Length: 112
Image (cartoon, rainbow, N blue to C red; front, side, top):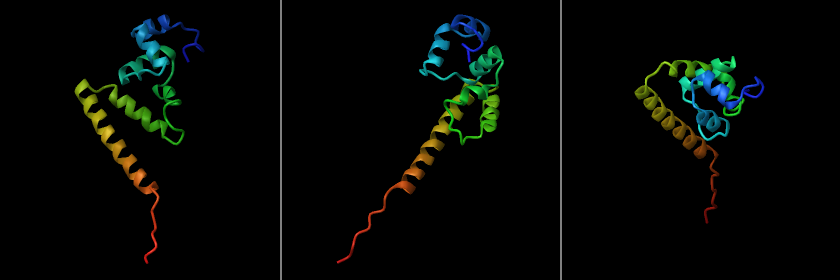
């Protein structure tokens, strides 16, 4: 998106109020921006925050819901963000365990 708009990393960093290292890390997939940084990037690029989710979020995910979540989180303080992150980890792990159990093969043994 940055290249489509004709921005260098330095220009985008200045427009978004972020460091060049942050922009580079985001583009290389080493880090994902926090909600406030995501809002800043979106504003600098004239896009919605959800536009950055296409490579990260499966197509079956409701992007409107993600945009709502990002908007809410952009207004949260760091303590709230940490709490939400920990809660999200618990929920995702629980869901993966449920899926793993459902997908596990059932061994059927013949009784003698």
